Amino acid sequence: MEHEPSGAPAPEPRPGKPMLRALAGEAVWPPPLWLMRQAGRYLPEYRAIRQEAGDFIALCTAPELAAEVTLQPIRRFGMDGAILFSDILMVPWAMGQPLRFAEGEGPVLEPLRTAAAIDALDPARCAPRAAPIMETVRLVRGALDTHAPRVTLIGFAGSPFTVACYMVEGHGSRDFATARLMAFEEPAMFGRLIRTLIEATTQYLLAQLEAGAEALMLFDSWAGLLPPSQFRRWVIEPTAEIVRQIRKTNATVPIIGFPRLAGPMLAEYAQRTGVQCLGIDTTMDLRWAASAVRPDQALQGNLDPLSLIAGGAALEAETRTILGAMRGRPYVFNLGHGIEKVTPPEHVAALVRLVRTG
Ligand code: CP3
Image 1 (cartoon, rainbow, N blue to C red):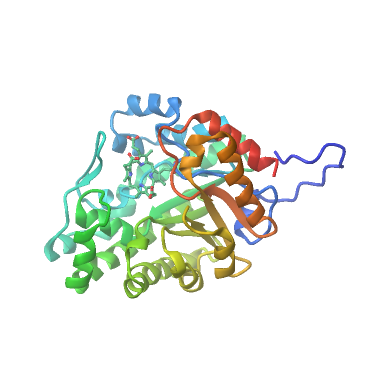
Image 2 (image 1 turned 30 degrees about the vertical axis):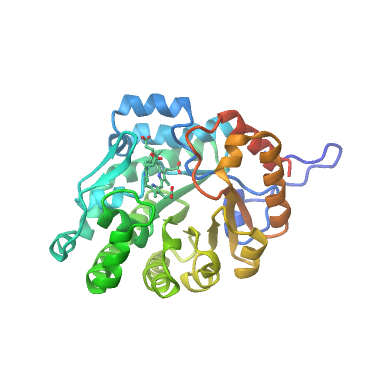
């Protein structure tokens, strides 16, 4: 729902989903909105389904439940984008790398440390084994077409570098030193892993498009750990290659790139990867980001998730600053990183109201 000042005649709503229009380069106002990790443990209805599913991977591979969880925040808050409920680590899982989500410590993978282990990965296995995830996409798209035709369905994957970090390290880390050292010491081996991921990720995203995803996002959460030369090699080039491959059959599908903590490398990333939209992390000044990308490239972000926990005056001030900086250019409101699990759902509702009233 777009709110107009009372008394003014409501303008004709323009055709097309607000988020797709913004991603195509239009300065839609108020801006479309969704939130990274909008489905998750801060919602009691998520925790109920998660318990029903058992573990996290079971939830990601149970299409009915995963579709329900994808739609929960849309029903409760009315976001403009619904992001497929899955995880970036489902790509290594689908290629056969053992994965589990340990309670309270995050993902645990059997670490990949040898050329033989990397050679044993089969990128062709990824999309077929991820079939239940594609079924989730189909179910969500069907539900949106019937009940929420203004909502855009976002498919996603991790970018090769960030996914490789977890595959090599075997778990989350502050600096992913083992993975980054492999990139320096064994560039041919690390390069093989990245190439395998480019191929698997491309097939996985194409399958999501075929199942009904309308926009795609590439999460590169750890891109900012790399010095510029390595950033070009392991972040920009693989991303550009995935975008090129996808565009061969889907010439205009909007792709959002999120090179978290890229800093000034954002400019080169925006110029060379071919993405239409740049996800911006919390540390970046949005006016600077706007100066670093083409005027027709949309920006997405970058409210600090902690201000959403705080709520009240802090949330309002941060939100207004962001809206003031982005008015008049193509823009999608979002956080600068995922929602934290202690976030009060009422604060999310308040944020949606704030953004919708400009
Ligand atoms: O709502 C959404 O945004 C869609 C689903 C989604 C999840 N993870 C669900 C999830 C998406 C897009 C992701 C992306 C993801 N996963 C990233 C990139 C974005 C980022 O946060 O930097 C990364 C690095 C991961 C890997 C991952 N998955 C970690 C490190 C963890 C543990 C941390 C945590 O919050 O528990 C996960 C688990 C995870 N992925 C959960 C959810 C809802 C929590 C699992 C649970 O319910 O127990």
